[in-house]
Image (cartoon, rainbow, N blue to C red; front, side, top):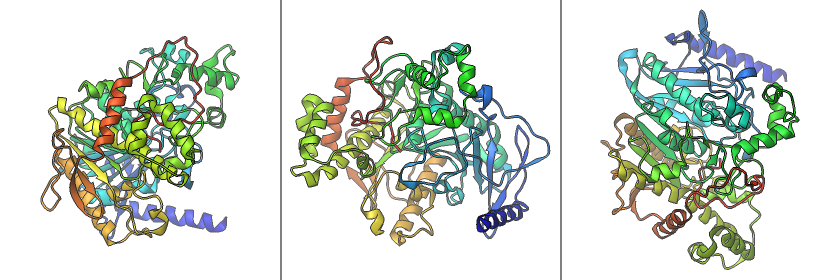
Length: 551
């Protein structure tokens, strides 16, 4: 305990010393001071900046409100709290939890406000249920050194970010509820437009990018009318438009309406029959709300799947439908997936035998089950998990990525497709392959100094950082000293592989992607009636052909 307190005390002192050399920044809500990083102090970090008022008390389950202005200089040298969430999968880090979580962080290499550098806004993953922009995976120093202003954000998660209820919809001027996490992201982008110039960023050159649920959020911002004009390029890493798209009042793809879920949660918390159910719900502690909601994690986790809601306002229709119709915002789009996306998720599913695997395929794919099995075969029980992992990876990540870049044919802006295949030499990491979220450390450069990575990984990280920041600067990831990356065209069907070598590939999993596209088009979004009893939301299922995210 004494050792921990000493470490915290030294960290505070170090941050305070570093902050002495950092320029103060005038925001629309007040003056802030940050910390200078590196031996030369050439990158400045500002952490824990409030971009909205704390969504607590009467502001729980309301759209984000403007932060309260402050007097004097606010020290922004430490991250803000994380939104309340369950213990994340695989023992990931977890910070201090609080509903007072609407903070963002800025890293800038700018020397003066007039530098007008490209801006990149990172939306973290975590299945819309876990995570934070403060994670060490997303440290922005190395990415900022590539000449961009890097912003990472928090947003409300799980039942705090995506709970809907008829009474919440009734009190809303838009008659909608359930998209508070998405509205937080939009509020953060509005904050960037108002304030990023003070950090030397160009508000007219902003890129949103994210992974998994963050990537799924990018796709929903791409079709939200509320986000129009708030960003000018987009990057979607391992997450798409398909899958867990919940509707406010209708059953949707066999998932119950979110207002129905909210009613069930209010009943479980003993608030449904109160004189004022909403006031009673808002009086519950976050611990009580989180325990009752028991949000699901991963593609096959048990519990309620929280996420953005098709509410007719922030999300006017199913994102898949909007992308297919070419109704997304017309901005350059960079999209991709990893080679072994499914390796983490299949560990949650109790599918170990050929008989169970075939039964699952029959239940999910019906008349197409034999064709799917032929593409992802398992003749012996020992082969099932690997086959299932490949199936999940291609159906839930590779095919949705191709769908997204193909949908851009109806827009003027180009799209670029990638596939990440590098497996680090670490014995521990090799078992999972090029797993879900592995590429994040390469994009941010946070693999530096970590065990299990070699010079090949460091060179690949440098290439990816330069491609990502070049795209943020110009809408085109090509540039001097960078690998040729052709814009996606349906006929050529090319993508850039980031692996042991960086090279152009043609027809990535074409046969399987064609099949899953056909299955998706044949099924379409399945609407139900609002009065129809919903199916259970607490049992694991195979992702619906092409899913959004699980992490």
